[in-house]
View 1: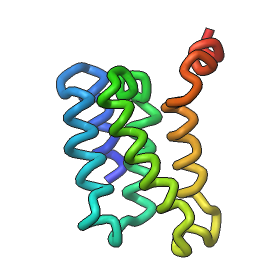
View 2: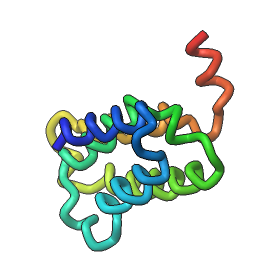
View 3: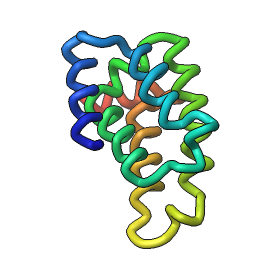
View 4: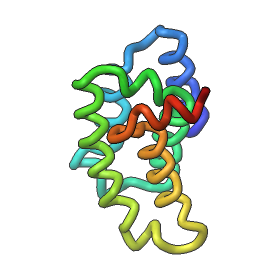
Length: 115
């Protein structure tokens, strides 16, 4: 599953699919109400791989930003679930990293860090 998400991220980077496709299809299908009870660490890791590879492309428009805010509010709830709070706690780490990459509140700080 992780490798499929990496391919999706590379398709987005190559502009063969749009960021709206990724948000509306991939994020929505994983984080929708019907599937949320079945979420596992692999699902979160797949979303993390997409964000890690193409976060700049995903946070371009206001509509994308509002979608990401909604998905991050869901992920904030998910990372506190008991099934993710044992062991190495990779899910809370990945959710925090995705939020830092998206940097929805402080866009300018992220740009300065890359120069």
